[in-house]
Image 1: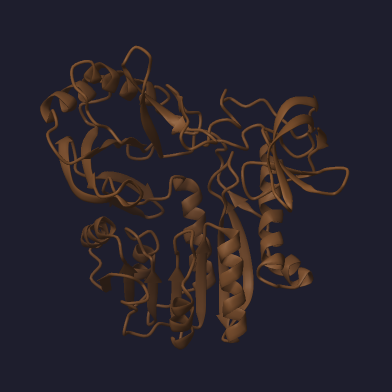
Image 2: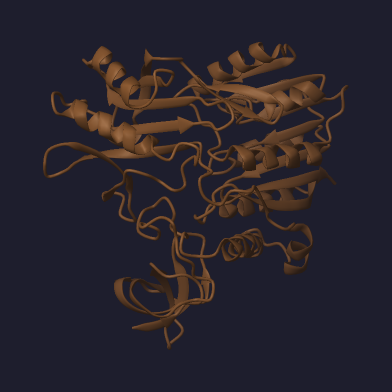
Length: 439
């Protein structure tokens, strides 16, 4: 079929309609393209198709520095101009707030602020994760997952990765390929972190428990990359869909990767989460602090706090902070970061944010949940605090809109603003900082 793509959806595809008015999600196309496509799946309300030929390219289509843009899962929007990407992200947020959140379109237009972003649209990621696969020669290769999660596209560079280290992926791949000649390393995935600010490099090898050629791996990777690079083995166990970290061991270098963000220098262990775009994450911190405007005599609460991205700046501005995090490695990182920063006014609580909700009250509160958003019980508990202002940091517009609807139904907090932040250029993902104030 021939289709004209109208806009980008929250996902890798462009949206079009058949002559009969049926919705079509078109893979491999961008908004404004006219394409010839074939159908790969048809449901009652929509069709999924793949573009075979671009008949007329979109005025917003650009040449991507990545040959796998739109094929690899890392940069599905890489063929779309950065201006068009950011406009689409704003519109996707507004659409979710209206459709799912039930917020009037006029109010949405009033509260959604222009999208914020850092300077770099490519070469911004401080971390990439690669999947191992074996070539026909039996040697190991590293790659990115394609649109089909089972597909691995082998790469020796990634234009999204930190531009200060353009050859790092190739060096790590070459070293692991050499090592695989003599032994099966049983690699499950490989994480590479690099900081242009501190110069820190970390290679994390995720494997099952069991025997491992520690000394040989450490020596070969140090020769290939740098003798200052940290080489960490992360051992996991359990069923494939629910594997958990059982232990980590340092094979070479430092035990933690360090990054400077804002006024802080943080230590992050290999299993712990940290925002992949440091410069854009600083925009998140600024927006949160602007929304909360914390005072020296006030108490703060940081739910789903991770290793302390928001906890540390809050602790420097507030009298006391209650910080809750369920992931063990992140809790340990948070304690270490607080100790290094000489901050002793934080109560670190390990556990689920609902089950371990702090007993202490709060004047200001920040919540940065995973993609699934907040449980209804968490929203109820937040409403029961005395918090005057809440900053909600979201990575998914649909779950954010759902949660804002719950907040509005309670009538405790009013929506002041929602600011999208482009942490992930070349993808459909976008962070949002929402400011809620007590009604």
